[in-house]
Image 1 (cartoon, rainbow, N blue to C red):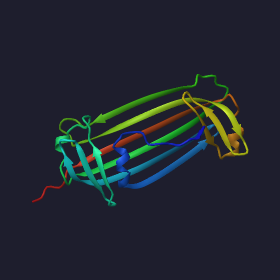
Image 2 (cartoon, one colour; image 1 turned 30 degrees about the vertical axis):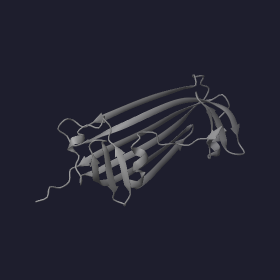
Image 3 (cartoon, rainbow, N blue to C red; image 1 turned 120 degrees about the vertical axis):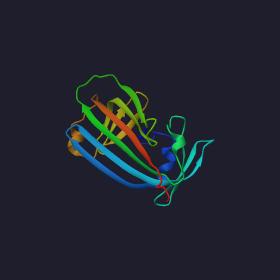
Image 4 (tube, rainbow, N blue to C red; image 1 turned 90 degrees about the vertical axis):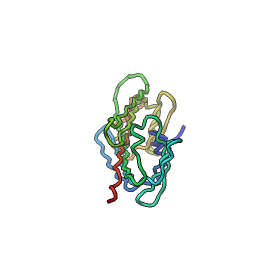
Length: 195
């Protein structure tokens, strides 16, 4: 069994752009039987190199970090990219948990993905998003350590529940519905023309 961790699994390119991170904001909220958290990170930089053959784009972040991004075949208008263009990306991750008291819903997992790209005459840009919905069963409660054990379709995890009122509301056999969303939006602004 392992502790719950929220991991970035959106796009291979995102693994390399963390060197460009500029800001991060976390907003969390809860109500009886419900908890949610949202995190947004922004990345900005300038294209410093483009390898058209391998479709690798090197971006130097405003904070000095460098990332190499593989602009695969799904990236439309690749030919419009130029050294000096500005790149802006925003990554949003959200997790919502809802207690389903007395539910006998089947333990399950559903994955969805969607993407939107630039049109033929637009600057390169777009958005990619994934949504995972899991129905898990509460199999154990450890009041001393403030954790509940959730059994999902593939594994069990221990979830920390710091709020005593929330923990007291949970019983073995309850279901917890978790929805995790990751989305990244990106835009390329052409470099200013030199006179």
